[in-house]
Length: 438
Image 1 (cartoon, rainbow, N blue to C red):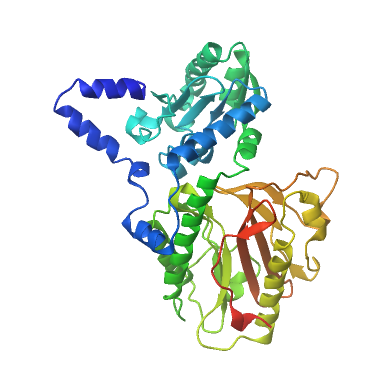
Image 2: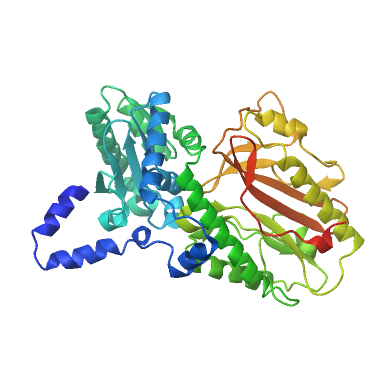
């Protein structure tokens, strides 16, 4: 049933109309992030994004890229791609590993969400969604040994829509799909294109309203960090400390945290230990990476390293921290429109890869999550390295991790930056540790 049909149906059923209307108005996207976040944003003077404009802009971006890649439409399974194109969600983490929900965006035609359990009320907030249908799932969890048979039914419905609205174009972009599905779509004569490329390029340039939403998301993340810091005392475990951050962030409309990257003392070198039951000791460094899918679904990806307790930092701690700080400050100054990705790599401040451990990338894009591009270190460049150009409206994260291979402290720092017409705007503002700087 389309939403227009659903609304007509509601008007015919008398008193029951009020019940259905209440259900629709309780959509989480319609309710918004909540009074706590709104009051803090109002006090901080942060403008409210126009979500209608955001939805229209993002769908327009997707369709422009579909035209550019000569595709009749795009079939999306990645929950973040579905979110970008439709601003509709349903158990995003669960559906990221259970292919039970998908969306089909036609270049000229309908936007159809195939919903787990066919719940229309999850998408009623966005009139750009033409229709909600019941998802046909052929993952083994639900289909068992009938997976291939179910995939045939699934593919037939997709192909029929492409045939009806594709104007003879049989080229369909697809982001993620199991082998049974790929086989069935191709057996019906569809030519499949890389939907991940389409979506990464669509998501690359943020609108003004998207940036309003992101600024609010960042503010709430930093507020949650500030409140988390009140609990940062010797003896608290890493996971207890991290739970304080997550609680505060969710209370301000955050949706989930992509990782649990918080580590202290000897667990902070090398990087990529997730938080544990280990108590944090006085005099130890503790580093964390927010990786927060926050308010309105926009990601705040920033990192800080703090010293636990009242002890003075050691010279070695100050040396490593200062190296990390200087690296991101230096590399941030390279960010301006027209700079190529390879120029970022070749001009960035780096430390000896033989003496110091480093982060995975120098820079990366960010939007609803970590996004294209990921900028490598100079020693990783080769004939297969891609290139591109920074453009106004891109949002980039500047990364650093520094820790000696021989041991000792490790420091993780990261800032989030908007590329402007003339250079960059620093979006994150949580202070660094002056006591840890040489």
